[in-house]
Length: 237
Image (cartoon, rainbow, N blue to C red; front, side, top):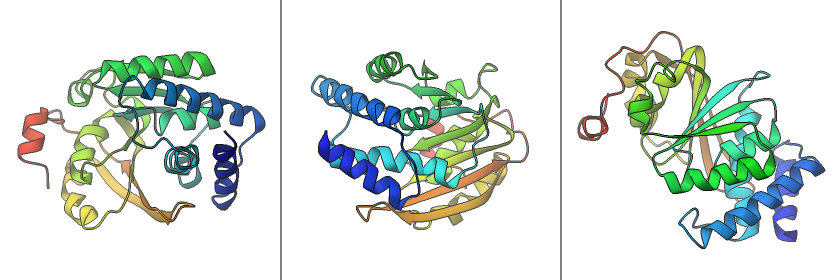
């Protein structure tokens, strides 16, 4: 774990992020669980501890560097996968509560084990995003929605913005943006959102990253999100 700790501490300094000893212990235990479970199921292609520290943990923590997250905020991580950014965020901020949504039950079994072992403030939700986004239990109930995904911004917006309450924000965590912002403007307006900030930066390993903050300024029309087949066939523009 020495390489993980070195990369974590040195990288955190460059990003002006502080990590306590207690948080360090949790990151180490998370890494052990991640690598152990990764032998049984496909959780991550990144297995070198120093790369996990930068590409997963520090990348996830940039959410807190660039977004003002109030005490006790409720967040939904749409398509949480192996727990990025949700697990690092909960390790860093034990006051926030995160709902981790994914369509793959096996991944959520792993997440449940991590949450239980580390004593984190989060729950899992086994559901399709477009179905949960129509449910009264989850629709417009969160201060923030986030997704760390490869889908284009207009597609991510339809899946994620319905979860956000008015005056809350959808925070899209992406690599590069290219022409995605211009392409997504119409979709974002239609869904009740407005882009209020775009941060483009590099991680300590020089990987390019982008973070787009979309504020929810009005309710999302009831017809959205559509079923996944419609979203895939004709993305909003």
